[in-house]
Length: 393
Image: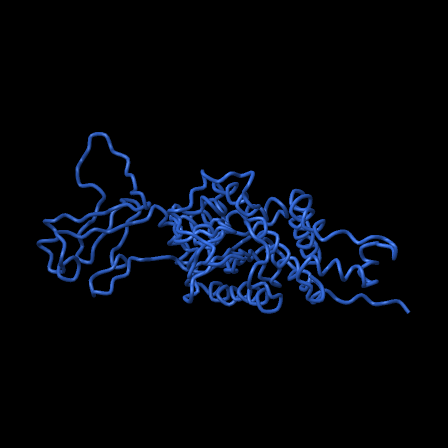
């Protein structure tokens, strides 16, 4: 709000006394100032139902694109945690929270919104893992200790920016968990394409977005080069051979160990070839023969505590290899520097615009505040980068 006004009651008092506010609101000196509850009802009713703030945000983005401030070729994505308007004292463990016992007609607005988003991929259905605590006043917020300090309830604001000038192309509110944040990037990329017709050449992000499924979605389904570090847990610290020491033959679908022996998914010869199915984590298992491992001089450096060596390969490994190849290019080094632009926007949002803690509750409240913050940042970008028109004398 203007001039540090933090409540609707105070805003109505200022409109009553300040002629500039009366002029802006088109109120005559004798006109009555609306009651403060009118603002709340419109904000929670007509404005939210019409998706006004989303329309305002997209209008500003369209202006940035029209002025040439965003090309849509190099995009960067990241998420930042914003504290919710909820506290630990007004919460209960998840085991004591029963959504089925809540009467939607008598529940507060934030609780009703929580019940409506139980199947939403960004909120209730984001993860099967139950949080430690659930807030009574804002149950959709996430109990998190991601910053390493005391835990608190929070939401995540997710940005998709154009790295040319740091214009925010899309913003999405989610719970503060990795699955929801990664899923929001897919939503924003598709929405930017549908709304503005932008097809990016690359996406820049940190390791949190480097899962096999995400890399495959970008590379294979959307044709976007993933400038993202790959999440790889195949490294070993005990001195034995890592998966990188085994050569993979794509045509024969076998691995070759440093000793020259082959690791296959199956060693039995079936009359009718069987379909090779991955496990629940999307991993395929390749095994060496026990006889080969027993006779190998490198067994002590390969599998000293196991009868034979096993290798896991993701079904998304081709896309992971594509991301690894990109990471060795000069363009990737440039992308690592460009990624800081989205982090700078979050710092600006919290320190300059003072959005370090939400004032509204519920998924819709978080979405409204995040849209307003992103809109303000894009407007500042327009005012800063566009040339000042000359005034005719």
